[in-house]
Length: 530
Image (tube, rainbow, N blue to C red; front, top):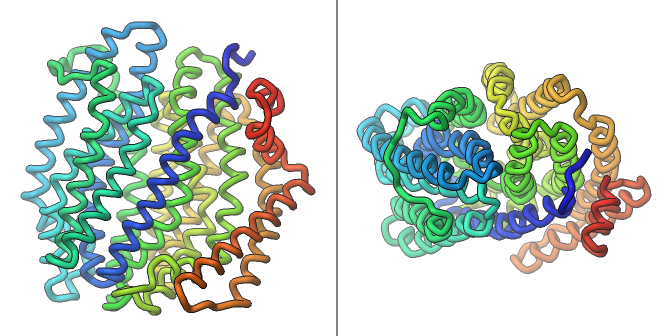
């Protein structure tokens, strides 16, 4: 039976709303960060060198420290907190905090020394452009120390979220992006692309420091590293498969950039830079909706899994996924229908010209068709991690890495950088389908009928909205910034109205629940959602 107390929809809505508001603001700032970079550096070779430079330390950090820590750490600390063992939770947290600090410093030192080897591995095609590999190495060495701040920040975020405190961790990315924007505008015109690299370090440091006061209130301190502690031994046991699971996503992104660097290097539309701009756009809705929902629901999933409460676990997994489909499918329609007007509005100014606009818009289309699967992955995998099943996502993911490489190579020969984006979409869809199929075997059922019904009905409504938005986009081609803003905004509003109307006609359950969550007392809304 579902547990008593505050209902799942109410608790999920409260946590997800905070995360969504902060994440929306952060993603808007993230797009503004890219707008500033596009204005100063366009999609040039210098911007491509920066992409490889910041991606390499980010890849290592995500693989070895950041995401692995949050995935294996939150369930472990949640169990201590659920049993009321606060002192033990603090002891384990302090020990791991010190370990992360030491490991982060060691990795920064190693990365600085290995930069000349890392760049050719990440972008072998850069060798065809004189001076580009050297610039990428220099930028990598500037940015690599940020890996330490990223690792510490992700650890503190996990610590706070295990305590059901989402405020500081939700606001930290706002400071991260704001700092990078300010640094880019101040330093970029003076010292070029190196200013963007320095701004990135400042942003990661600010993101870590702003969370420390809240973490200290919950008792987080540097502690003695006790590798013999049962919790740390358990974390070590879980970390390897979790790290491999995260590596799947990061290796796929690495493979994409690896192949993109080998496409013809066009000075005004470097394929690596083009791929990155399109990816940033598609990650905005994924972050606003998928990551905020998955982050908010993960502690609940972990607690239900820790008590073997499979009824609540299934509901906690199903409701966010259905909600995600309800909001992400119309966004997918918008990204497909308005891709070129949207890219033109966001980026086409300064060093970012029409050639880059067309290239990024086409690549965005390749990513957008897979946006529902890209977003759903964040929610589905959290259920596995809450169950501490790190092996299944890894097994499926290894096959997906191979498939992604094959599709990248095949499709880029036909469609260039667009083919690489399309390969990501295809692989994401297959990956999520296999994960859901395997999860059904683990839990007995995954509410597949309701999930499929939501996907079919909302997908139909999204197609109707997308057709209207595409017609509006083709009918008018405004020139000025204000006119472009009105054009994109009006098309989006009309599409939203058509989508809501179609959902009402198709009796989409999630639309009714959304209205009741907004207008009704929480208890009534909870009953409506069940």
